[in-house]
Amino acid sequence: MELIFLTFTRLIPKGMIAGMLLAGAAWADDSAATAAKAEKAKSPEERIFPSAPWKKLDVAVPLVGEGGPPLWKEGEIQEDTGELMLSQRLQRADELLLVCYFESKYVPQYNARNGKFTWRWRIHSRGRVVQSLRGEIPVGSIIEVIQATEETPPGTSYTRKDFVANKVQEKTVSEPGVLVYLLMERGDVKKEDGIYVYRKLDHLRERPAKFYTEDIERFIKVRPASISEESVHARLLPGR
Image (cartoon, rainbow, N blue to C red; front, side, top):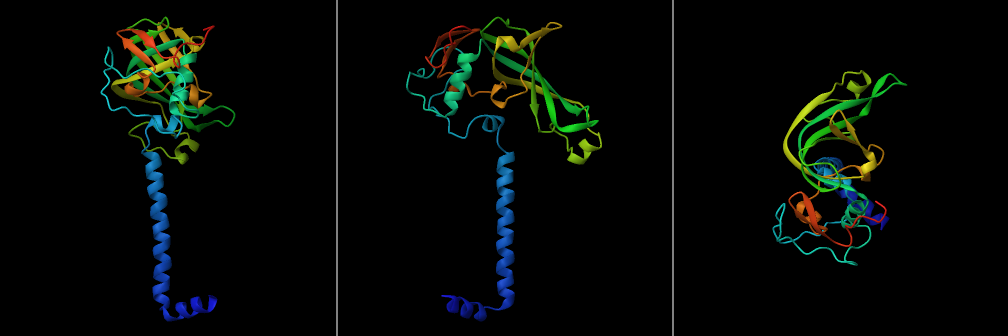
């Protein structure tokens, strides 16, 4: 086999072999760039939720009212799926709101020990409560949700050198009419100067997240400002 390979390489001009090697390296670089681009293009939901695919439904689901898909039944949700995670969060959340965001403020995190900014931000997203589905926060209230992220504010081009040189600064971004479901635990919601503030920075799965309407409505049936029916996987755990 080695003799055949050596004979074959002797028959091919050295320039052709070099070209083949360069082409292989270029293909590897293109593949890595494509993979990096695909990762960057992922939505926030894809970064937050597990990689298991969600069950997509073929019916159009209204935001509120009747006519949605049937609720999840006991035993229908498999382990280690996005539905399981959402089910667990619904069972813990004693505050469940539909909120319309109108702005987000990106605040760079500062490391007092090192005297420099870190490569992370806190996003202060403000919105108005459209529906109060579970809990005591009234419709029309302003709520501010504070999260941690490594993404830079939209429209900026900060680099790590800018962070080291303390050249970063706070930025407010307009978000006209972004609807999100907020699943929160009441003990983590504080009222400050008339605004409800929710801070949950420590764990990725505890952040409020945006859910597709057809997915969440397999767990709950929604009427204006209330839940009319919920599946066994969405019921609040006893003691809440």
